[in-house]
Length: 221
Length: 113
Ligand SMILES: Nc1nc2c(ncn2[C@@H]2O[C@H](COP(=O)(O)OP(=O)(O)OP(=O)(O)O)[C@@H](O)[C@H]2O)c(=O)[nH]1
Ligand SMILES: [Mg+2]
Ligand SMILES: [Zn+2]
Image 1 (cartoon, rainbow over the protein chains, first blue to last red):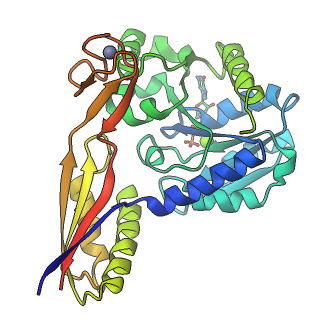
Image 2 (cartoon, protein in one colour):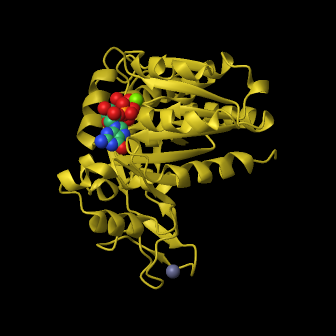
């Protein structure tokens, strides 16, 4: 005899439960964890380099590098002499809370203020998987076209701030700042946006200032 | 890509519930998916059809119900569905909203015997 069994459960519960655990652990250690999300090549690692150059003097930072198969990004950050843990997703398109939890085991959490997570380059999948982060940052670059907010609304809804990188390349692309802004604002009018060039340095001061305010303002709850 | 992982987690729940309820065979899995969730239903279905092979749900079908997007303006409290103006509130003309519906991804029920 056929029967129907009602379940009504979030399919990603397993990830969500672990994310909650990670979040509680980080709060108890008074650590801010920032999940950087972008398409491949938008500039997450470069942004981390530019950010760590100034932030390491003021806060105790660590990095979790999500990379599909290589350790190239992790190696680029070695010069900063901070704890770095690499997670190879072996083809997987996003990090999850279980791999983050294991990565946290490799740090001394009593000696950290902030952990940056470089997620796997992808605008879709990572936005479905809560890592237990304090907040997400969406990074897009001008060479990807100005339609990213319209095409990937989820991440621009969920992020605490967005970064538009490679503004130095605008003259060589058909990127329309006006189109980008109007799409972004219609999704999320109040989202802080930093228009930067990691290579030329534009906008980095504002970004670092905002970020430092976030880290300094984190409170033990 | 993440369709695979989602199906893995889905199958974990299906197997567990089937065992708890003493089902010998699962014939259908019913899930609900919000319109904002960026999952391609045909990819999810294909991944599901592979994942069930050799399991208690071998040959089962999957039904994906989509849930329309509903937003609420944080400023004036109006609930509305997004249109060509993105997530902008039709009254305030600004987008500062909570997503009431459209983000869900859950398993509603399984059918079997
Ligand atoms: N012109 C220009 N190039 C940049 C800028 N920022 C980064 N790049 C270049 O863009 C390329 C990709 O940068 P990465 O920082 O490796 O990007 P990513 O997001 O970490 O890439 P994945 O980890 O592979 O997803 C590199 O060659 C950088 O030098 C910028 O502001 N302007
Ligand atoms: Mg990188
Ligand atoms: Zn309103």
